[in-house]
Image (cartoon, rainbow, N blue to C red; front, side, top):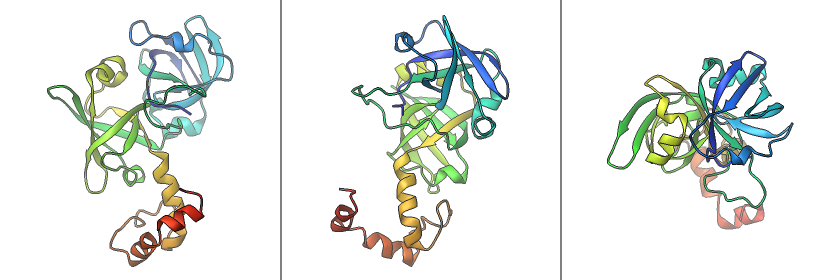
Length: 236
């Protein structure tokens, strides 16, 4: 489990279809968070939960599965690519972002980036499989960074996040260009809500038609979600 608060930047040394090796980059945030990294530890690399298989004085190697290569932006990375790094959350640590699992839902692409008075505004396009979980003012992890959706299209396929200068300068968001792929992990809460409601709506988990507010089944199911119902089933 992670929080979406990047602790350091790393540089890809080598990458193939089975493993990657990276080094802590100089500059950026402190790498002290990785001082006691051990074999088998989980580290989020651009938001992807990877397991440490070898340790070096200034870096590590991690195994990569075919599923990870297919589902994430790793296939687009090359030697010298800069990635965001975060160690796993420790019991008792501050939760400054939101709960991030490190299990990427899919790849989005940067549409545009605009500098405002006190932030950078990034607009990102995502496929339908992710779009249904994008909610205005909800949480989303972009390359492992915990961000808040400032606005989104009605279907959620395009959304905008506001990034403060510190986050922008200390993560690899600063290197993105229009069309750059980014790893997207939607808030896990939305996925559990969808799974819980799917049988009651007569649909299946992941069915794009499921969230339609015009559905009578949807309205019936929502009217049944009373405080008493939620308490009975352990949600409150």
